[in-house]
Length: 319
Ligand code: F6P
Image: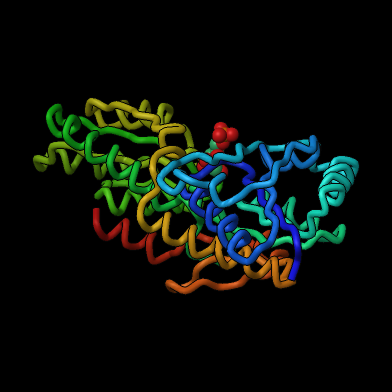
């Protein structure tokens, strides 16, 4: 068994990262293994910003969004010189492996470090739910719930005024968040980067539905599908219906994690720590059909997760 491991959170924070980190730390402590927390992601690894943690270091965290370790997107880590410095710092502290909690870019960084000989176990942490090989990423459920809550509120005012309201949500390349929250929130239209929507057809349908007496419509726009402000102008001009736009922004990234995110993050954190301590490397733990699964790290970062066509169809059918 390894004697000393470390963990970091990297990229955009997501609710449940703390729950995962807590599980990693407490599992290591339970097994009598030293555990180091690296502050601010790969940036902290390069700057030697790390500290030894104990069970108490992760008290009062399971209910908190954000990440107590801090996070960053590091340009320096993309260079070989940066990674060499990072590796040297880990070795100086006697660290024999790293748990990386983050999205695609962060796990790609982990794969590069692994190639330099450092054992790595990844956990998918991003609200985008766009990591290949897992149905689930830490924080996506909480973010989707935050969006549904916003949609519920927007419905009230949209209905009062007979307006169309567009809500822009996160997801530069992935429409999972928009699609899931849109379906769960009962949105009329969901615009995602993966599927081209004919705005002429959409506006025509909107006009006809208002003529038949519809009181309001909600359109969810993933940021990668275009700006809601721009699309809103087109919709207003082509339908003649009063239109408003709401950009949800970073509210989606924060907040207390849902039960699903707390539970799954805790399960993944334990698995990651146990695997790493027992000599497993080059893997990501995720979920498939409700069960924890192990995914090859290179496969996870080199493959592109696609949007489930069943969801796209469901969204269309439920309009
Ligand atoms: O990858 C997570 C994510 O929240 C995306 O959905 C979003 O596009 C991006 O991060 C925003 O990044 P930043 O916080 O750097 O503006």
